[in-house]
Length: 414
Image (cartoon, rainbow, N blue to C red):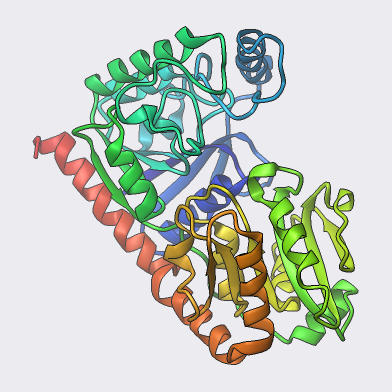
């Protein structure tokens, strides 16, 4: 079986990381998988970039320009919505033509247009689409944040005040697209699966949930003090870790962690390690150790192993790779009760699930892990949870079943 995984980026962003890991998991389990991306960042032979063309950048710019104009020249929500009004036609590429299954992942910001997806469906090839956020089930947004319009129809959008017709127009285009072809949708969490099934847009479509995979041979426990020494982190502190591609992204909840840290000032030798872009802009009343943006996987594993607790106070999440990575390295985690986070963190077994948007409960969870819980037991349960649920083999087997169903449906009308 030949599978073509399609994603905008090869490495940047959670969806890219998950898609790359799935490709490796499939190849390690008897499937010939390749990845097609717009932004190729390595020399990997199994990853193919779109043919070089000035249009690649223009697709991205044109979509942003349309959004910028329709939002009355405001940059506030410029990267929170996508129209898929422009993109590349991948159906003529040899990688597409030789594939048995086309597996879409995060294809936004000018990678594929809705008309391009329509061409893919008309090709007759089985199509699987992994949802890394809610965009395939809404008109234009990636995070609903309490909005339930997608359960009936997206007539207007809170992210585009004064431009109500645009969201409705994209919604209708998606409706027509989905009427013409059957897509097997896969959500990365049970929470996102339930949200997708509530969407009027996806009514009647096949939707299931399969978690992202992780290579537990790379992400595993190692000596904490040795990891700290390699990173130049202090040996005598209790370290909290916060990770985000862009630390200042308000949806990642750094403000709640800062408030929680203020409530933990009485704990001796406590510090905060910050991994991600713009880390130097964050200050708390606790000592901070900004590491910036790190691309090297082995260094990232060192970062996880160097800390005592990982905190992800996101306001919206699917099934965060970062929690999975931390747990695989034996690090207890704290996160809000939102999205797929409670599916990963078993409350007071391998971490702590805090009340949504409660900095007080976030602080309570950190304090419990560092001062009250059986810490080694938490670490062991975290490693076990990942090995049992998110290993490459277990995830690859689940996707193989979906591929076979999609192929049978296309070829035999089942």
